[in-house]
Length: 84
Image (cartoon, rainbow, N blue to C red; front, top):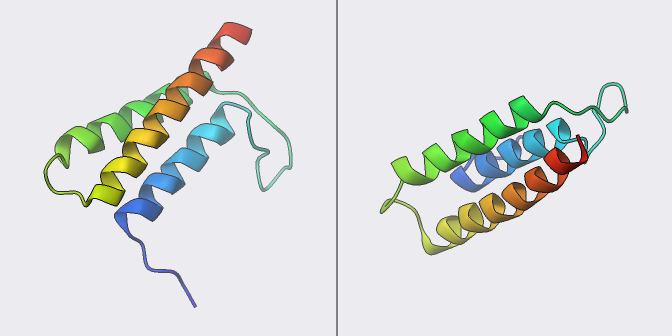
């Protein structure tokens, strides 16, 4: 049975994409960790845009999720960029 796509699962999917592109998680197909910081940054920017465009239309849980995700991803991005 396929899980219903919700705003929260969409944000978590984008988060996984960022983590893959920062080399935090291995690619599920190759099992290799690869770093693509420009793509990670682009996806973080996409999440930021979604936050701005959905302002006032999210539940409290969705707002907390997107705020938490953005904070964590930004911190991880700074760490990953410093290693380059």
